[in-house]
Length: 403
Ligand SMILES: C[S@@+](CC[C@H](N)C(=O)[O-])C[C@H]1O[C@@H](n2cnc3c(N)ncnc32)[C@H](O)[C@@H]1O
Image (cartoon, rainbow, N blue to C red; front, side):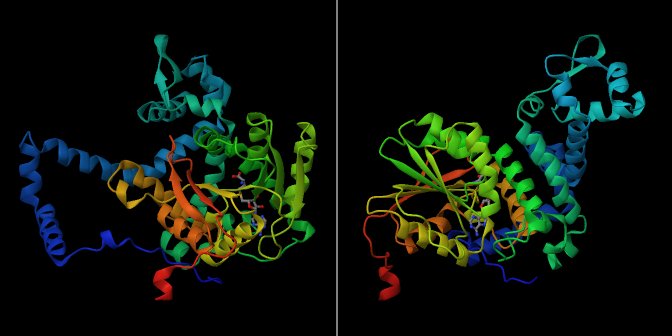
């Protein structure tokens, strides 16, 4: 790997005491004992627990099949075509050009996974998990895009030895290269990822708009703004705001067309540049960083945060929104498995990583932000939100590091 990766700071509570270590070793021996397995299944009080654990393990083994069933349904356009119009096996076989006996395996698997449902007269309709897939183009695009990641990870150990040799690293040109501006041949890559980001940003934007009041602000600078979907939706949500957008030059030329078509050119100014080499423009009293920090190593995140601090007036606010690792207070909740996806996605992409809210909070404080807090929001799987304020011009000094 050409660039060293940052290590995640393991929270101190996760470190076991020797008593806990001994207890966990004992549990491991119990779990491994064949007699315990048989006993727990014969006991009505423990049977559910053993069945649940076996089920979870089976699901882990079958995960690849599950995601391929999902991708198969997307590629055959089943979710959109079945929305409000259930269809029979022969009708679907005709539409997809697949033999009924083969297609039936896919449909029954999709029913088993909650993506489709049996309807009257032998027809198939959308299941509870299929409905959002029919409605949100961004989810379908992300599922199709994940195919690249799964190709890269086909041999997981080979992947860990050289994570940046596959399609994902090629897809994200900025995440492991410092070449700015890009060669013209690369411009297509910027268009491709910017389109995917715009399509998939809707849920994140919803989390931000429903968790933070923008009334106190006049002007928002969105750093890593992409094609401007967040800015466009915030402009409709808060008509008093003006905006600045900062991103790499090829991305902002795509944004220009987008803003023009929405009639927003009077309210938005564009500032092409790279936060690796350029300062951020001044004049905004709120800076937003949406799904940007996790793409970059700690050294770059420090640089972005310091530049954001320097660009804000005293009293200005930084809002950072992105998927974050599950905080230790929430340990044991089922959402933890989401972290596994992001750890591998970000590794395949480049030098960034999934950080806990606490890690990001300390990086923000290091850059000089005070009153740093995690805003509660409804759907942390899409993004968590951190807020910090610039309360003075001098950077924050951690007293512990001075003494
Ligand atoms: C993962 S995308 C997120 C885009 C958008 N904020 C969203 O949530 O959809 C990260 C954005 O950061 C931009 N970016 C990456 N490196 C950059 C750099 N050195 N300077 C400025 N922008 C950069 C990318 O072009 C991209 O638009």
